[in-house]
Image (cartoon, rainbow, N blue to C red; front, side, top):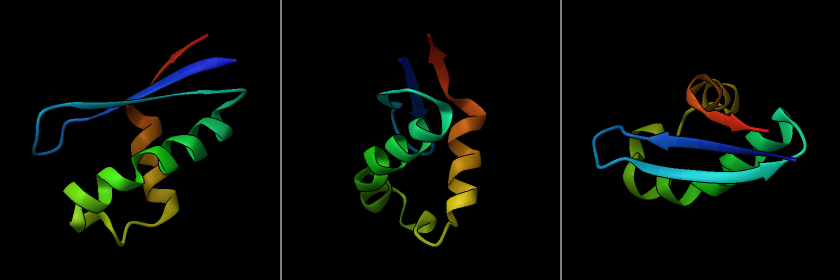
Amino acid sequence: MAKYTWTCEQGHEPKSFTVEAENDDEAVEKLMEETKGHVDEDHKDMEDMSPEEAKKMITSSWKKEE
């Protein structure tokens, strides 16, 4: 199992989210669920983002520890 951390720094103090997952696909699903409340509260402009766009945003800057 690996640990995945994604940090949001868009327009506020950095906020990190960390999940453990068996693979990248599971990590994306978990991180999207973990960050839902944050997006709903702090990023109303991203509510219409497609799942593919959200996945690309997360995977482009996450850190993975095996």
